[in-house]
Image 1 (cartoon, rainbow, N blue to C red):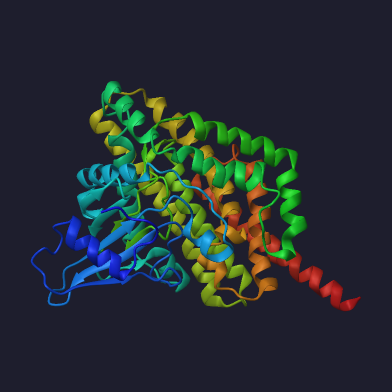
Image 2 (cartoon, rainbow, N blue to C red):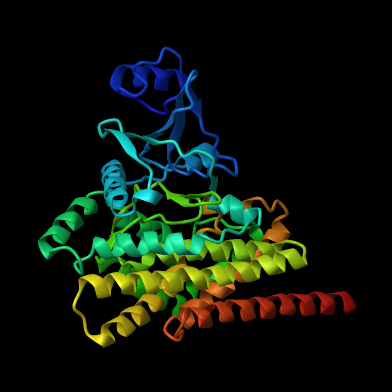
Length: 422
């Protein structure tokens, strides 16, 4: 069955019956398109449908990958192309990650590469991590489980564990998706180095232009871009942020691995912690409350816990499976922290543009209030790029973010007070 354009309920039902064995015994299959404008789903690129049986609780997700960003064409009739090999990356990475961390990864059941369709497990009774952050929820198990998942997939797909010829074969396979070029366009080139046409909150046009044209910003961005484009350290999730993690009171579940590729290991955690920082910054745009301040403190402590648990888990795996010099780990994590902070700085910028605006800021409708948190992000990104080799621990990083947030907000209070006096 050849498919042209978006599947809808009717065409998806026809496809399920004719092309798959999913629910083959069912006489009452129901199909529902997932709503992209909700706290339970944050899709930018793909068409997702829930498939189920009216007489059974069993459900599945049908994911139709599109060759362009869906949100862009729906909102502005702009086609932003995406790599077509993502379907293979997602299916195979799900299988690999499921083998490495079976408790935290959804099952993949069906692949139709010709039509860019994958069917996988429907994740029941869980919420998006981004939505939980927006609701200011806390989860004690989050840091440990995130750390275990990332440390295990990074270690067991690297040449610290696998033979080099196997790693080379995996690198060549996942490189076919071309996701490296996509991230370069989205994060480095397309958001900083060549981003003159990207739209942002109009209150910040001058601020973002000044940031992009700053010589230090450009130099540091080119430096981390070069590392990202050339370092093939481990198989990473590739799009590891708070809208690609489900969570409940017991555990996390990871999905949406279509951008998996061999990159620097720090890219995954950099993407995730950038989104934690974005939620932190969105609270600056809102009226002050003690609850929000306490939640900001929680987010910073969460960053510390995730990083320290990752370091602990990765170290444990290295000691168990490898012979290494004692200085290796210290050097490894010093470089890891530098890359991590650099990726955080570049990533937070990408998610404050209109075209990639994260939900944390999107829900703040007053553009002037929204601009406050976005301006903090721009200034913080500049500072992090400037100091990316100075931090010696994750605690130094979180302390810097906290102190800089206080300085930023105090400067705004003073400026507003002086304006009222004059």
